[in-house]
Length: 304
Image 1 (cartoon, rainbow, N blue to C red):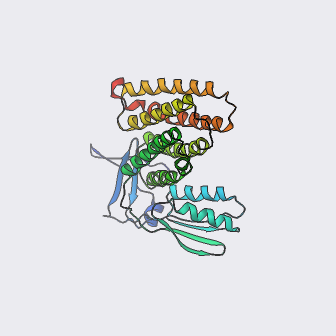
Image 2 (cartoon, rainbow, N blue to C red):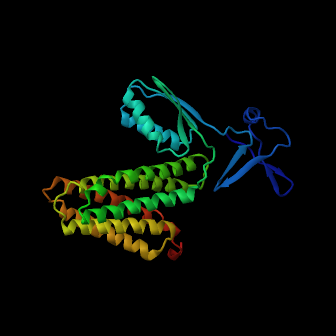
Image 3 (cartoon, rainbow, N blue to C red):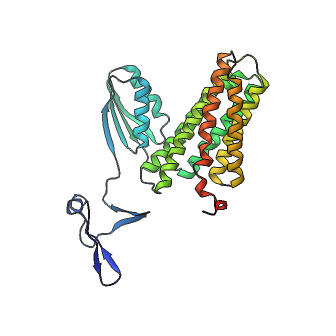
């Protein structure tokens, strides 16, 4: 909708609030409302605005993986109460397992074909910044664990590395939910959302990498070298995210090109597990490469 600007004296400018909106939220003369600047936009919030979002869906006919994805997305989008109807026991199991990765959520009620999931804490005792940093550090820990365990033939560590990915999911999901629940920052917000989504994907790929590495019988030195370089690229992405520096951006693109070339040279291997590991390394490299490149505008040294 459009509103005309009303000029009062020589300084004050006013616009009227939509009548339908003021009636819905009980806005009266003298009430205070929250006005927040967001670039060229103004966000106007009523004190009586609803604080919870509820959704009820039927996932019957979906696969467990799709039910898993739906629950994660509903949480990330900011829903506080999710009621799910289903037709198969495997869907219920997938939903219950996914809830374990949703910080502040619990299954509150369950019957034969219905699960009610709700937020048990309107405000968790954690914040966005510490959660995002924690997700980064867990991913880096996964990277180091992959390399060290592979070098030492420690297949047990590699096989159990998937457990760390649950924690990556928890903190990334929480950060995405935080953004959708009201965090605003214009264009940068969308970039941030993408990078957090990508970080969760990096955790998935390190989990897959560990699985493939555990099946490789011959530990070739050139593969170890590639893992080390990809881990270095991941750490540069983390470092640049928190402290952007021109030299770091240059090192990132240089190392990225080296890694991609080495991976291509090794893909002639006849070992299917080694090929799968190289594919995971290639995916990780292509994701973490974006952490410096998508935030080059933050570099003071560019003089922009």
